Amino acid sequence: MCGRFTLFATYADLLDYLEAEQAIPENEYAPHYNIAPTQSILAVINDGSKNRLGYLKWGLIPEWARDDQMAAKLMNARAETIHEKPSFKDSFRTKRCLIPMNGYYEWTQAYGEKAPVYVLSEQHQILLAAGIWASWTSPEGKKVFTCSILTQQASAEVSSIHHRMPVFVSKQHMQDWLNPTVTSVSHLREILNQSLTSGLHFHRVGTDVNSPKHDHPHLIKQIEAS
Image (cartoon, rainbow, N blue to C red):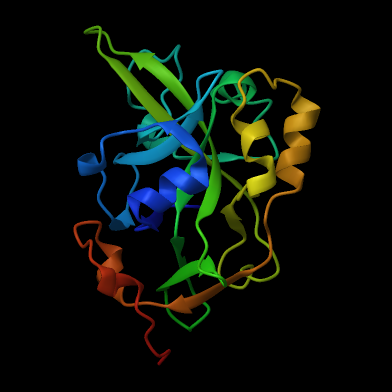
């Protein structure tokens, strides 16, 4: 699954890597080291002509939902069944996004106790997690833009810490994934099947990350396993 992650790439690097032509003002971006569900997270969508970088609330609220209570349960969507689930299938076809991250946290029993680990690219590259988004209107008439991160069976490299992991879209498939005119389920599933599953490694980190109130660079520092 994916329940916490980091994003501390520079604003300029994000714009360049995501090929975003429209974005939030630079002063609205800040690095974060412990991003949690229900928070606003940076994501890129395509409006049919250009990539747009902005914020979405993490936890999908389907357009047909009566209230926002579903959001906490829909922070992740299983890639294997996303095209079938009522909460996800419409967004999967036409409202897809990418969530940039430098790495993500997982909690594992691999050290003999439940302990947090940090997973990142071996090359320290920006990772592009596949996502879907939705626009929901509250009973009071307020529009809320939300998203969910796709997960898949863990690769051999990280399966020892958890059986699920985020789906990371390769840079070469970025534009096809974002393009809202690409609606073929078979083509979209092909993109998911070619997701990045290698080139990741992990290390143990301290328990400060257990609380989303903590948000500082020290959280990703490796500690020795006891």
